[in-house]
Image (tube, rainbow, N blue to C red):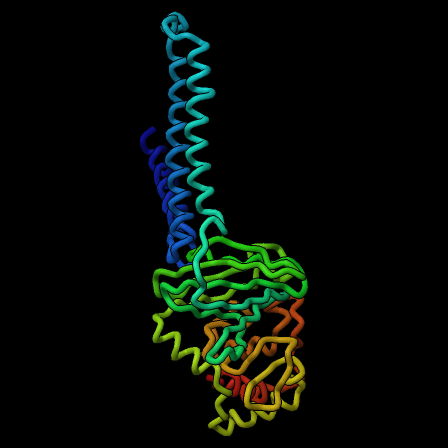
Length: 330
């Protein structure tokens, strides 16, 4: 009997460890790195403990009712028991949880924004815009950088369908609704790289719509923003020069902007500093030349229903030159 129970205990322990692994990591709401995420995590643990205590009391009551004879409870007045356990205790516990939770609602507390980031959720990528020095708008895509301890407001919109902007480690989620601008307030408290996602089904490639969020020190962010506002670097190698010519000649300029060149398209992501980004295709692949070549050849296979065409008409060397040029945009 004991031999039979051992595999079962191991399985239970393994499942418990697997479940606990979701309590940490760069996309866990229970491993907070922001003020609002910390409040939400605290609310979760308070609700978990309180409901756990209530569950234990219910199990205890059920156990005693089955274990002991009815005569053992003659001293208990039914009316008083119902009033205490069915009215007074639920009112106190649920009322306390409600009061605590209402304090965490967006808008219950207001604070001045130190910076605003505009994000537009599109099928199936993220258009990002910062406000630089002298009010100049700086366009980026599929990656967000913010300074630690800064009060940041995200202005969220969408031109097509409803998306939902969510960075679990930093705070709650908020829908991006066509024709409406919603505002989400976040205060990151720990430097690091976190994962944001779309939390609202928005079409075929919904699950392939993520973005890294890099929380930096203020000095690091200021330096990055200054570089992000600059024009693209000129290609320095013969392969990169060929890749730039290929980019300009194959129709990429109709959809993409690269500041400092004749590329002025606004349909797709801004690629001015594409080489500094961590991922390709909104979180699908790490940003390397090899992965970019694969993306250019198999775009529709990697991201179904994506509007970007595949470049199968180019040979391997041409795709390689194009990848060298794009990954060199830093």
